[in-house]
Image (cartoon, rainbow, N blue to C red; front, side):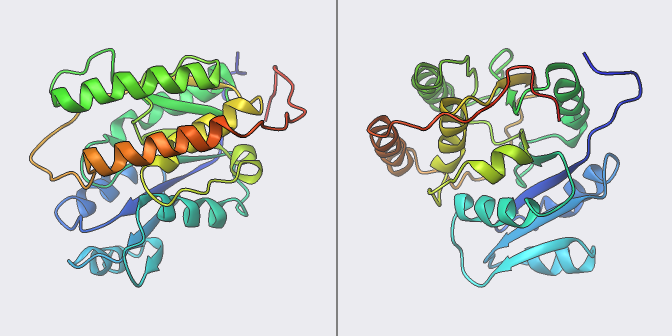
Length: 240
């Protein structure tokens, strides 16, 4: 349990690629909770970078598109040097609601977990059936590999402690990076918890390729299953 009035410090990390339609509103809503925002502009071909500069947002700009995993990795490396406790990652295409940010902060203060995952699966209304089934299946596999319950492995809305970022190396440059960090963190002893977030699907076009990214997922599982992780000296009642 947390002490009354206790706070944690965090940055919001937002990978952004061709999201001029959503980004301005998203940043305004995030600012209602924190001004610690880092956007990784991933070689967009629209006005995404222009909007970031107009709003004077801290950012890293890729000259070419490198993929979501590469954007997360660059953001993690940059923020690992900040004097903060956690990094909150969220998508920039309107599928994550900044109004759910307090859920993560409350969850971290209550559980003291090292990773807090957003969970949409308790109320997945509106989630496309193929995404629902894929998520259930991949979450089942990752749960078995982690030895901890993972209800929504594909949700990129998550709070990750700086300790995890500094000690867990992520090698993937695409969407499988989100699965990789969960598995690697759990296998060396970091604790994972969940908070409920809303399910939002609109007319936005997903950059996920079901076939290509499924192949990448199974390659990741095969690669990690062949590696025996070295345990870190982590206390179960770890407090930041």
